[in-house]
Length: 89
Image (cartoon, rainbow, N blue to C red):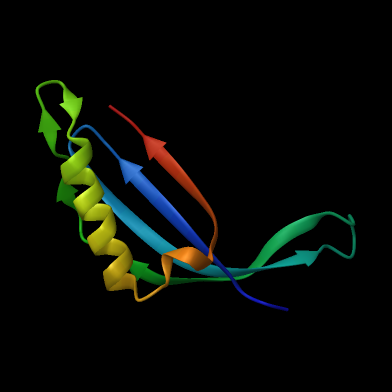
């Protein structure tokens, strides 16, 4: 089965980071439900201070971090199957 590439982003009031993982989607033989299996982290960014402009996250600065993290992960951004974002603070 093909591996999926997943992107996770964490934007907090102090720091932000990214993680890239691979996983497979399999059918659980007991429940019949689809689930992620054989997950593996392939890239974990360093923590950066969350950039702000006034009291709002600086979109342009955050986009630059995101572009750099994806580039550093070595994964073509067109092949991400799914992602998730946590925003706190």
